[in-house]
Image 1 (spheres, helix red, strand yellow):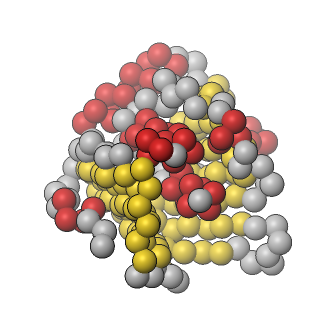
Image 2 (tube, one colour):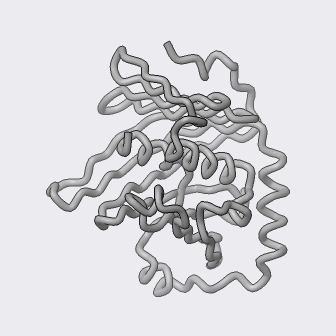
Length: 214
């Protein structure tokens, strides 16, 4: 369950590097948080659907080489989300309403968000990010920085459930679209997951059937 939670959290994206490197590369504190907050929220309100391919890099200190995987991501309002790994293995996570379903090979497991606090926290985080409400999310404290191309959101977990496995989340919003472009999740151990979203399509038609999982 912990692994599934970590994978599910990993859904939105950044031009990523450790915080000390971010400072060295010229990131500065955002001067007008109120204005940025409104811009992000206004943009998020206009987003009805998202489709993107993704590349995930998993760094584990115990392994000599990083693990790379590839797949597709779909989102449709209100709470419909599909996270599908396609290479080198097939693994699918779907969220619809208050339920998360996970398909590994031919087996599908379902989890009720209301009965699982960790999944509920993760679901809240994803919904908040997709709606541009990162500043109101009580599960994380947020610090905003920027450079010429990106707004960088540094999220620190506030709940004990998330603190058990998660140290920091870095989200990079590109300044043109004001959508998250890459994400890096750093675990307490120092291992991390980096996801890069490519070929993002906003407000295209996505059939409801894409969120069916059997």
